[in-house]
Image (cartoon, rainbow, N blue to C red; front, side, top):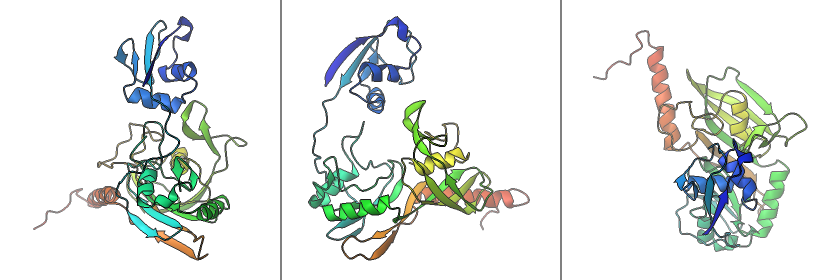
Length: 322
C-alpha cells in the first residue's frame, strides 16, 4: 500500500470527501475512491469518514492506495452452478452476491476467476481481467449468463449481443402495484451527471438507447412480480428503467432509496436472469436455458402471497390450522 497525506485547502470547504479525493488523486476513479473509503483506507484527521462527508477546509486526509492489479487473473477454485458446457461455451447460473469480474473493492472471489479454474481455456479469450466474459450480471442479481471458451465463440456471442438477437428474460419483484398489464420502456441511459457511480435515465439525445419490454405476472398490495425482456443491454438497465417508473426493484438501495422496506431478508436484489437464448457458435443451433427463481426470491413471494390472502379475508385474519 502507498500512503499519501493531503491537506484540504479552505477553498474546498463544502465539497464531498469522495469528490475532493477523486480530483486530488486523479489516477483513481471515484468508484475506487469510494471503495477505499468504505474499506477503511481513508482517514480524515486520523479518523474514518464517510464518502459523503462535507469538508470544512483545513483537514488532513490520509489515503492508502493499493498497487495496480496484475494484468492477468489468477484462477480460484470456487464452486459454480454449471447449466451447460461444451467445447466453446459455458452457461452458469450465478448466485446473488458474486461479482462477475474484478473491480474496485472486489479483487478476488469473482465468477471470472472461478471459471478460469474450472475451464482454463477461457484464458486469453476477451480481456485478460475478464476472460471469457461476454456480458455481466450485477453483483446482487442472480441467474444465467454465458461465457466463451474460445475466441470464435466470443466473437459470435458478442456479435449476437450487438445485433440484439440473443434472448434475455428476467423476473423481478418491484415496489408498488403496477396497474398496466404490460408495456415498453424506451428511455436512454447514461452516467448520472450528479453521481458518476450511478446510471440514470437521460434526456432525449443523451445517453444510449435502452429498451425494456415487460409484463405483469402477479400483483400484491404493495409489490408486483414482473417479467422483463431486454432488447438492449445497458448497465443497470432494468433497475434504472423501473425506478424511473416509480417502481424500483425490491432490495435496490441504489435506485430505490433506503427507506423502502422489503418484508423479508432478501440477500440481494429481487432480480433474476431466468432465461437465456442464443445461437450456439459451433452447431449454429438455437438454444435456450432456464433457471428457476432462487429460494431467496421465492421466500419473498411466499410472504407476499400469504399477506395478500390474509388481507383479502373479511376479518383480516388467516384461519388457524387444526
